[in-house]
Image 1 (cartoon, one colour):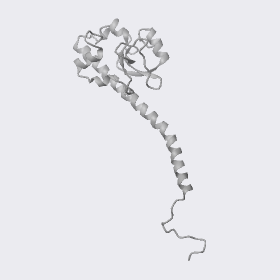
Image 2 (cartoon, helix red, strand yellow; image 1 turned 135 degrees about the horizontal axis):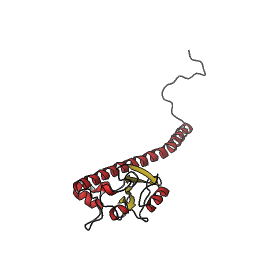
Image 3 (cartoon, rainbow, N blue to C red; image 1 turned 60 degrees about the horizontal axis):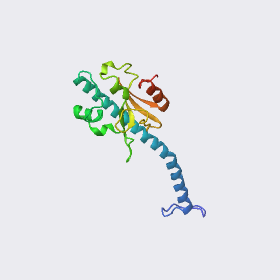
Length: 185
């Protein structure tokens, strides 16, 4: 038997406007907490893809050097090291663009300037685990003082001569630039 104050659920009840607004507000709060985490994850994924692309470029450098008696590709009369590697090692040109590149920007990988001025052979480069091979820059020039870009939360991914990639901040890059792109840490 049902008492006078008890109601039996009939399935026909609807939410009141207040209850609906409360549910929407809760969803909005949860979404606002989740979106920054999703954006950080997206940026981290781009940085990981950038590292992968730089490692592939490093392998192309070694393949090129193996085919050309240890010589590294540098600036040549017909284009940049990017076009030279693309022509000789079958690496796709698109790989030379950082995934953080947006429409209208030109974040690409630039070769450390001393490599194509001072050292021409891969085995003559001192401190391969500390010497920058390529970093992130703009335009076709080598990594000069004016061309650095730090698209990964104020850091730049740097491919070293020994083919490992590490993220470097502005201060460390300035110190390395003053020492022919040899990092001290």
